[in-house]
Amino acid sequence: MNRPIELTVAHAKQFDRFFDWPVLLIFLISFIVMLRTQATWVIPVMSVVAMGVAYKGYMEYRVIRHFAEHQAVVRVLRYRLIDCWIGAVSLFALFIPMYVNEDAFILIGGIVALWGLTKSYREKKWEERIHAHQSKLPTYEEVLEGRDDVWNYHQK
Image (cartoon, rainbow, N blue to C red; front, side, top):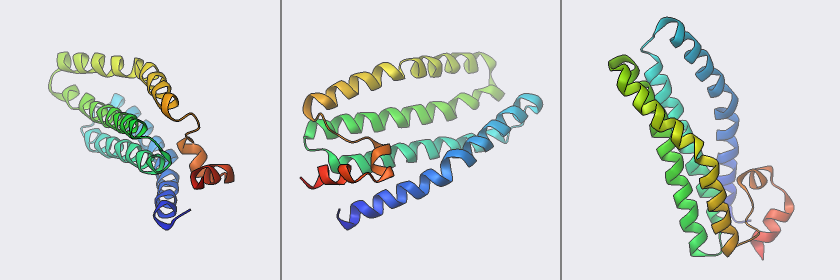
């Protein structure tokens, strides 16, 4: 494995350790408090969570693109990155109209819900497109776990 990929994977592991459980816990606590008190400070908290989700999608793209052997696979990985960013922006945008206009909150909530409901369908279609060009592309989790066969595959 070469040095830039090692640094990218190490940075992704460090970010996952920091972002996964602590931020999820902060999000859940602040959401419960917001429902009880209508605190406006949840909007900045949600912006941090949305930026973290977007950055995590970017790290996944940076790690997996090194294993892509075909340009079409890289294109699909970019589409997945854009989808992650759209989800993060919509998550943040959902909480702003909660304090401004309840009708807008319901409308944006419906759009976010539809986007979330169709995520599994989009992921399935992207996996089909990836496997059509490269059937043995490792997943993000396999690369972060550091299994030897993943790196051996990359060296071939």
